[in-house]
Image (tube, rainbow, N blue to C red; front, side):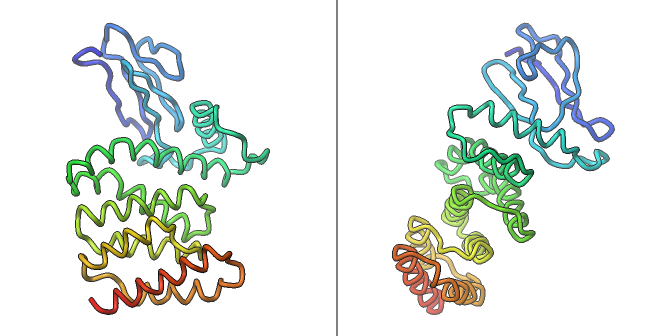
Length: 242
C-alpha cells in the first residue's frame, strides 16, 4: 500500500472511491480503477492485500436502494463464500438480506475479537453496537433472522456485557430471543449465569416475559430446548435475587 493510497468520499448521497495515484492501484470487483468510480452496496474494494465490501445501508440523500443494488450485494457476498452449500433455490429479498446479515457480522467480528481480547469495551461497542441493534430492529419488524446469525449476535452481546459490565447487553439477548420465541443457545445461557452474578440492573420484567413466551411455546420444542427453558427459568430466579 502507498502512504496515501485511496480515498472514499460521500458525494451527493453516493460513495465515490478515488485512487490517489497509488503505486499498485485500487481495484473494484477485480477491475482496476483508473481515477475514480462510484460504488454501490456490495462492491468489493481491494487495496493492497485487504478486501473491503461496501455495506448496504442508507446514506443521506441516496434514497431507497434499488432491487438491483440489493441483488448485486447478495451476489457479491455469495461469490466471496462460494464454497458454502446452497440452502435452497429461492431468490427472495429476505433470503438475500439474511445472507448479508450473517456475512456482515462475520466481517465485524474479525475486528471486534481483537479489541475484545484487549478488554477495550468502548471500542468493541463502537464496532458492534449499531450492527447488533439493527439486527434487533429487523427482527422486531418481522424480518427472518437465521438461527446462526441470531446465535452469533447473542454471543457478541454477552461478550460486550462481560467487558463493559452493562446490563443492556444482557437485556439485548433476552429481547432478541423473546422476538424469535426460541430458547437462548446453551453457551449463551452459561455466560448469562456468570454475568448475572456480576452485573446488576438487568430488566427482570423482560426476563419474566421471555420465560412466559417460552412456556407458551413448549409444545413445539424438543427435549434439549425444554431443558434450556428450565435453565432460563433459573436465570430468572437468579436475577430476582440481585
